[in-house]
Image (tube, rainbow, N blue to C red):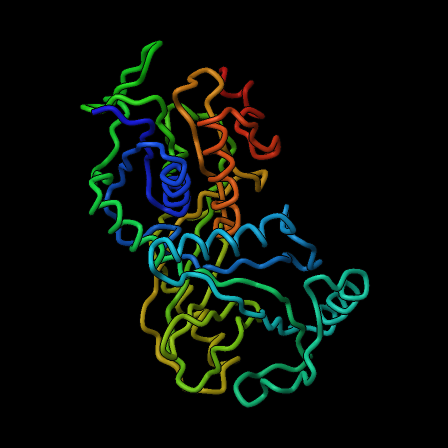
Length: 351
């Protein structure tokens, strides 16, 4: 069977890449083993335009925000679902110093920051002492709905193979590349945290980190905002909220821990003034990078092999933008942004 591309992985990266390839008229097969929980499925789905204690704008956000809004709405309409909504983030100040930092940043650049009309308007539901600021616009992506609907779409069209990808079955030649019964021009690895063991890209500076989150039912808590006070409390559905997350750079295993469950439970008791019920608890390993920039593009020594990985915590905003860029690069030779191009690691990949 001849196809233009083989995509390995159907997380956010593989899902977005398959969309742009299909819109461009390219043929492809997606190979993805069935996993109940991945970094994409465990994520909150927030696109936040600012980051860190200094409340600085995230990398490329002025380009990423409008692209994400347009892309998710177009993808959702194409699949017949709604998968993006705008939600302001209510950022509650844990200390007077954090309040001061927000106000200083607001004075310098108010593009995404503001103060509410009444900083006490959450006191019926939350315990907080130093007020809060607003971050807007922020977007909330229904990642699971997007992944599930696209998976169903791929299965119905016969373009999904639910199996483990086997590197030993790759046969490279000067004319094409073969994988089992498939002949293709390009294999693109969108394999998330598993990419750290990819034999074609052994020296890339992955910086995998583990996150844990819980699903919590809190009847009566307004779902109008994403609430941030150390943890994020994100509206999920029908009185349920996503609570998380941690960022562990050193961990013994990828499983949920009792330590996080207890810590999060204590946070809920201290912060939320309403009864709550913990419904689920999960953990996943993020495909982050030490540079906090993604890996996008063709291998410098194996032009038939490409990578689309390393989105870290910013996958919801980075994946659609760079999926379109990678599609244009693969089909038309247009350049990848230098800061994201895997070619910046040419020396390491030549070893």
